[in-house]
Image 1 (cartoon, helix red, strand yellow):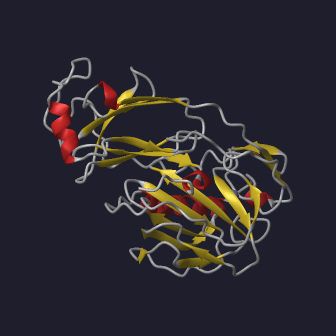
Image 2 (image 1 turned 120 degrees about the vertical axis):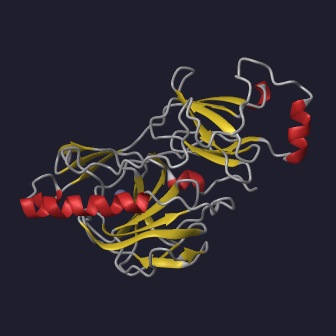
Image 3 (image 1 turned 90 degrees about the vertical axis):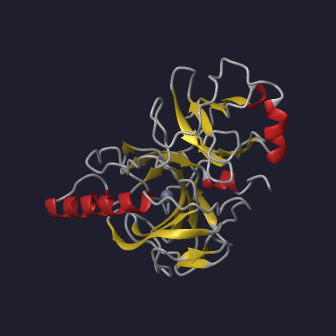
Length: 323
Ligand SMILES: [Zn+2]
């Protein structure tokens, strides 16, 4: 298990993108976790398992372990990171931010379940409900995030919108919502992520506090990688294209790759989209080229990663532990 993050540098106010705070009418897609099982819901719940306060009979655990010797959680224990847990097929897993604030998830057919941690996550409790040795209480150190100023945006990209523009913004949001609702079953990320651009200059780190034309905005949830127009962008891991759209208001042209279990990577402001929705892509396959469409002040890729509705730091996932 690892716990680390990158040392962060103050970013230059170039080649930037993101969402302004005053865009309250442009909601981030609120994707409901497809596999979430609410407490006490009877649908799709695995066979009842004794409450966690009760000890699972000790002879039961070794036999379960023998079926899957990898039981446990491993990954990037940091704000913006994620862990992959191995448990029993379809096993119920208790996940929470505290003992009182929790919900249930369900492992897939192979017993795997991914849990992501938000930019500002303080604590994550994961209980595989297989005994005390499979209860995790992750505490996250607060990361230090940069401050990044984006200047010189036209008013139409910084909070002053006409009715026509608002229509386009809402239409873009609706299409994005569909792309984010994708839930591929395959686990495309298990062999780790590679950088989607080979030669680039990083201009903004994940999580940076943002201002747009001097006005505070939402934090920047991606990594901005500047490179010449037309530079190839490659899939960082296997996945299926859940969205490929070249008419989005802020993102300009964007590709979404679904890597499984609600793990969706995003490629914003691209110039040329080279894939189609539903297409399977392999790690290293070209999906687009670098552009500057939408709210962008120069050719760059804004690379983002979400686990359901949480924003993760894609760069941390490049260090995903080898299986
Ligand atoms: Zn960006």
